[in-house]
Image (cartoon, rainbow over all chains, first blue to last red):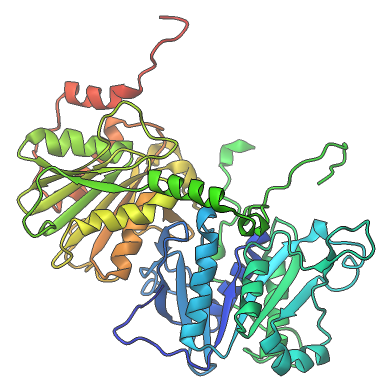
Amino acid sequence: MFISAGDVVPSFKGFTLIMPAVSVGNVGQLAVDLLISTLNMPRVGYFHTDCLIPMVGNNPYATSTEDAAQLSTSAEVYSHSDLKLAVLQIRTPIIQTKVRSFRKLIVSWIKSSLFLRSVLLSSSHAYQRDDQQLHGTPLRFLLSPSLQKEEGQRVEELGWREMERISAFPEISDSEQRLYIPGGGVTKALYTDCCTEDIPMAVVLIFCSEGDNIPDAFALINHLNDWLHLLEKPTQGSVQWRVPSSWKLLFGSGIPPLLF
Amino acid sequence: MATFFGEVLSVYSRAVEEDEDDDMTRENEEDEQIRREIEEKRQVDVHWLLQPDSGSLSCSDLIIAAGPNATGFVSAYVLSSGGWRPVARVSLWNERSRTDGEPSCVLYQQKQVLICQCSCYVAEDQLFQWTEKVFGCVQARGLSVTVLSDCSVAEYKTSDYLSGSSTPFLRCLKTSTHSSATSAVACPLLEPPNISCGLAAAVLTHCEVQRIPAVLYQLYSDVPHADSLSMQAYREPVSAVLKLDHQSPGAEVLQKITGVCAIQSNLYT
């Protein structure tokens, strides 16, 4: 549940919520890190729940020694009132037996906070793409029916590609078409919940493989920015996203000098 | 996933498990009952040995020790001096629980200080409940928490190579309400991207969210079990909370604690 970091409980009415799904390559989470770091979003609360594996560390977005000591937990909410933007960052996996509870928690929080719309950033295994999906952009979107009315035209103008439905039985031509997001974690289930509960939700995902997923995170956040215009795109070049200070040593410590 | 040599590997993702959630929706009554039984078996319970009248203990300091060096330190340097009475024990079961019946998580009290010595493994799905139950035993008003936790130096990330002579060493993490001014211990903060997980993280998260002043001292050691040098590292931070004997514990006491990991037998003896 949401617990405010300050004495006043912030109001998210009319805000846009952006949150990641814990998915292949952690791309959604990396993209959210870029957003929080670049927009310098202050933390407004914690998402305190028994559904996530606990974790603590020092401020991952620290820019100086003064703000380095702020303790950070496994799920926190950041806000930017001018942009009417709220961001939920999730830093640890969901406990296996608590996935369903977690989904219920998120849906109930979205409803009670009266968010205008929610965006779920996610990813899917690149190796699971079918022949059609191998061509063109690796970025996909999904809109829940309530958001389809407002944003359907806009995403069409942007030339975005909707996530394809897959045959339940590929060999049989007239088998039922269903949504399949392998490696997406709770993406499909949460999206389905939002459709059922009539919550305006967009899913923006990228096909990728595990490895150095920083370029995928940049691709995803730039794609999102084309739609939401969170940062001004310069006439030449791309948006200058600020990489958080915690992104160093992603692949381990320094190499021992005697190794070679 | 098929590889170059033709063998099929199951692909592992660091972010997700491959199970589709569809299985959960096809759950029947029997599955639900099994799930409930497993949940009940994994419950965390507090058993009072000396129940306070008000239902919870009033104390100014709570020290939580998790990990072989931390719990070893508490046994050798704190409890051995006497004057500590066990007031409660926390019981739980998971796949890694010891079967010898020895209580593995006990709360001891001496005046206004409470020590929770946790030598059992608390599973991921039990951490939240464990924390809530332990903090449910204590009144939060005026409380200050110190957590002692062990970690392997292999988990410590730094851009400079760490030579063997630098271990064991301490790093700390503090909650927002913890005043650095009152802390007499000079211990560097844990540098990002390093993090703390497990019991220590669950406790610190609880304290941060409930605005309880808390500090975690994470010990990085290159020895996989308890050793006297590593245990000694906790002396300074705990001295800030408790008055400890000037003398180090005797060799027999230390050997009893560290000797638990001695090789039972090998080919040569």
